[in-house]
Length: 221
Image (tube, rainbow, N blue to C red; front, side, top):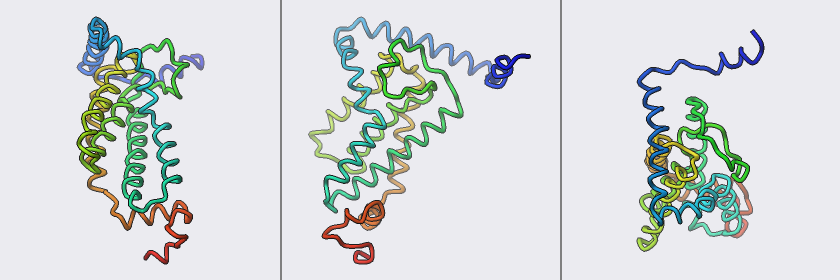
């Protein structure tokens, strides 16, 4: 038995018959859904913006932007929002990575993968969908923005989830699982929510320069 055969045997896992049928149906219905959706002009136009939507909800983009904002905006009133959002994004990355490593479901065939930012080879669940709906619930339920901004937030999160199918990055079950995971993450962050004092301490631990007027941790507590 050569090395390739051994590796194939190691990676191959026994899948229950009902689950194998479910995954096969998921693949088939994803293809049908995408094909049917592209018959509608508004959805076809959405596909032209799918790459932007992909970047707009990428984990690296959000973490980089948030860290930049944390450094640029030295306002204790925002520490609580910044730290809880940062914590939630880290939790999302860990959960998605862990589930993908455990399930190891392969992505659909991607013809333009070289255009994406670090695509991984596993599909379940959709990290973009989980992140989009976590962010949506964060800014509508946990730390609400003005209600006038809620409709655009809902539209953005829904469009991100739909774009994962139109770009054929994920199957339907991947996206649905991502949405459910994002909702559960929002509930978890609600339970583990860091108060103002804790958020200030975490910010000061990250950098003493972020403390107002050069104060130290001992000055605050």
